[in-house]
Each structure stands twice: as structure tokens, then as C-alpha cells.
Figure 1 (cartoon, rainbow, N blue to C red):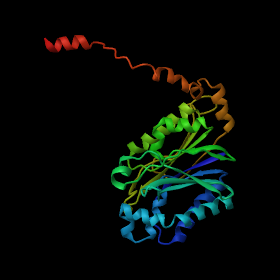
Figure 2 (cartoon, one colour):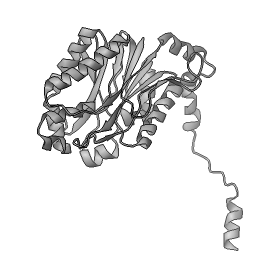
Figure 3 (cartoon, rainbow, N blue to C red):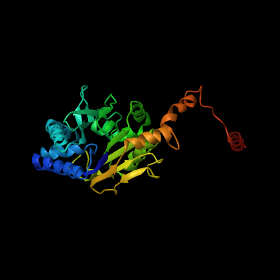
Figure 4 (cartoon, helix red, strand yellow):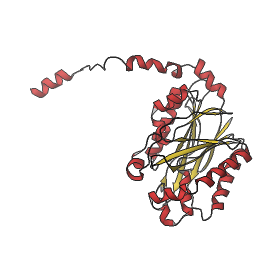
Length: 306
């Protein structure tokens, strides 16, 4: 299959049809290149706050209300585009009201028949916890699709290996990582996490970020990132593990041809078998205790006393 990862600029929209036109161009462009799986970024839907009064876009709480009011139309649009262009689309994530009253950061995956399901972000960043008051989801999902089994780890979630491991144990071969980071350090944390998950799980990981400045939008005023598609550095995959990567801040799609057969080959017959050997960590990790070995500490203490 061909995968397309978006480096997606956050834009101001004066009318709903402006947003419709933007999404349609992005989806058509990717499909014209042969892409079957399209991945949009974390919080990319927050640009819809521009359709409300400006005070909504500039306020964290009010921006959630403004975007949430549009999500029904947004999902209908994505379902329509998925059907028309016969593609799978991971839509840009957005906060939605969760059952406990707190908003949750949610990504939705649409199939070519228009059906969809969602994955909520599970671990919140400091900004989400302390400033925006976004709450976590509580369920990991595996999407069984015509393209294979797909998992979604939203941004910060990919920095926690046990989440990916649970998905891999359930058969996931492709991990999607919508991201939104406001510094180069943040981008690299997510990218390094994505590449680490590709290494240890011997799978393909797709990172799609927001990019550019949107000073009018409190939720995502500065966006730093580059789209990338990563695999394990072994067998048929590139030596670097980087299957495809864009340049920092460059808008547009990054494409890669990915074979599930190659993923399965490296998991079964790779130079290393990280995925199979993962459980061997348990023997050391569940040992009675971690033993403390003092090397040079006694001599240092004696010198300090002298």
C-alpha cells in the first residue's frame, strides 16, 4: 500500500466551504499519487475555531466549544471523502466532550465505505493537563481494516512503549501518530518515540504533524514538525529506519510504499527479533529486586571524611 503523512498547516477559514475545499484538495492530491491510507495531525481540527467569533479561537475553553459544535459536519465530510476517493483517512484530532465532563483528544479513522471509529489520547502532556484541562481516554483500540490491523497513538502516547506493545500483541502492524508540537525538541521527542516503537515492535510508524504559526489560535499558535514514515532498520527496510521524511516546516504530503509482507518477514526472519524477544525482558524485570553495586563509592566516602 501507499501511505501519505500530512505536514499540515493550520489555516484561518472565513467560511465552512473554505475548509471543505482545503480538505478536498488534500485528499484528492494524495489519492492522485496512489495513497490508500491518509494520516492527518493531532489538533489539526482546531483551525475550525476560526469559523466562530475571533474571541473563541483565542480562548482555550471557548475554542473547544466552537470546534465541538462543528464535529458532526467534519465527520460527515471525512466519511464522504473516504467514500468518494476510496481511501482510509485518519482525520485530524480534536477535543470532544467525554462522559466524565472533561474534553478528550480524539482521532477518528474512516474506511472507504464511510464507516468510522475513534481512538482517544491516553496520556496527557503538561499543557493539556495544566492549561487546557483535557482528560485522558481509557481504551486502546485496534482497527481491523482491509489494509491490515492499524493502531493510533496520539503524539505523547507514542513515547510510552507499553501502549504500542499492547497493540502489537493484538496484531497491529501499522501505527499512526498524529502529532502537534510547538518546539523542535517536542517534535524530536515524538519522532524518536515513533522510531523507537518501529524498532522494538518491528512495524511501520507514521507521524503526521501540524506546522506553521497561527497566532490567532490559542490551542496551536506555534507548530513545529515534519512528516515521516519509519520502519525497523533491518532486512528490506532502510538502514536508518527512515522510509520517508519531509523537511522541518515544509507543508504537504510525505509518501511511502509499505508492504505488510516485509513487516511480517522482518518479524519472523530479521537479523534481530525484537518483537518476539520482548517477553524475555520480564525475567529480569520481575526479579526480586534491582541490586545496587557500589563502584568506588567507599573510596569516595573515605576521601570526603578525610
